[in-house]
Length: 271
Image 1: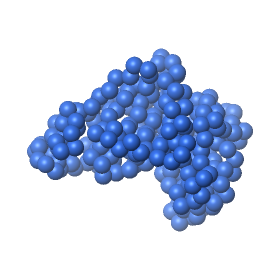
Image 2: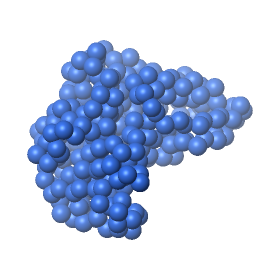
Image 3: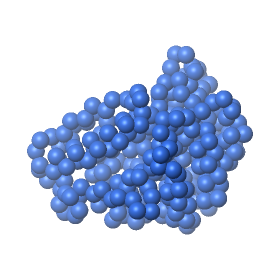
Image 4: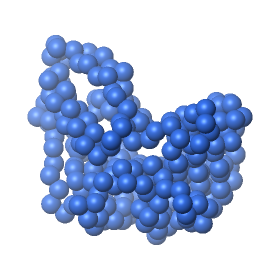
């Protein structure tokens, strides 16, 4: 069962489509259409020049709904076909423009860094991706992925730093505000699982991201709760988001209710 809580606060409202209340009851075409329209309206209200998502749904209400979409990652996530990172990347496209400055606070194996670069890159080379990770292996993996995926000129728009993401303000110029700051928390996939992000430094990094974020920008966090320390980190992030002033920030989360260990996606928009 999938739920969207928006905004995050102590008495947050829970929106759950009726047809998604039971796994055995397949959602009809009209309910996800209405649900996604609500989500899109929420995104579009806070961004002046969003990307356009061309979305169409089958009119039939069969057991296996036919969904024809250009950007179908959000619906694929709802129906259990796509990963949390895919829905995060979809939301980023509503926010990030070519030429923007963006921050990957946890480079990992470089997939988010690459996605960001493709969003900001243009012929002027004015876009920039700042990437952070405390593990040299993660930065090597990211650099190799970029070598295999983009041109040398495009790679020059990425700046990688082997420092804690809580220190992002030490290297991102004072006069540069970020359109997106993204966190993909937990441990390095394929790496040492004992090396994890921790609540103390993650909250410091979120506060730094809050200061560096441009108006109309987004903080995106994918939080993994299935490893030791993950739930504590999630609780700290939710508490941080819950205390942001509603006149200046909009916060929401995607959470799979009947998979307790599934990652949770949190979006924090600056109005």
